[in-house]
Amino acid sequence: MDKTEGNLERVLTVADPLIAGHLESILSERGIHCHVRNRHLVGGAGEIPPLEAWPEIWVDAEDAAAARRLIDEVLEPTGAAAESWVCRGCGETIEGQFAQCWRCGEYPD
Ligand SMILES: [Zn+2]
Image 1 (tube, rainbow, N blue to C red):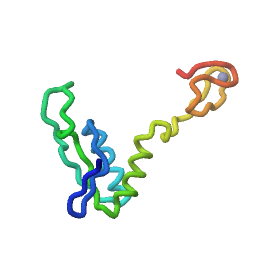
Image 2: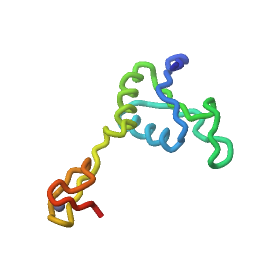
Image 3: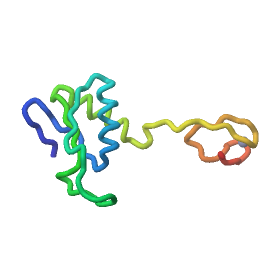
Image 4: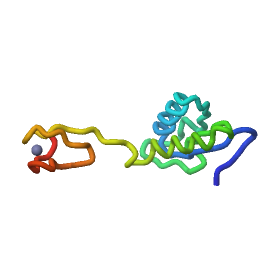
């Protein structure tokens, strides 16, 4: 499904230009030069643009594998560690993946 063009390879098509911009800066930080196409969407707010109009991230073909790995890490919901919180009931520090204190049953603020 991914297209190639010259020495560039498309690694992602995403509906949200904000996500495309976010990924672009992460990839750039890792030294992967990328090109975002269709950055500016046409159409009204709340309108879902056709797939052809979605922002696309293209990278040099030699960086494509590394770029995909990075993108997977960023977009994988469980990949991001949630922040830990301190229980107001017992003062225990609870790891972010727990929605309730394992010690006293209190919930975070
Ligand atoms: Zn507690």
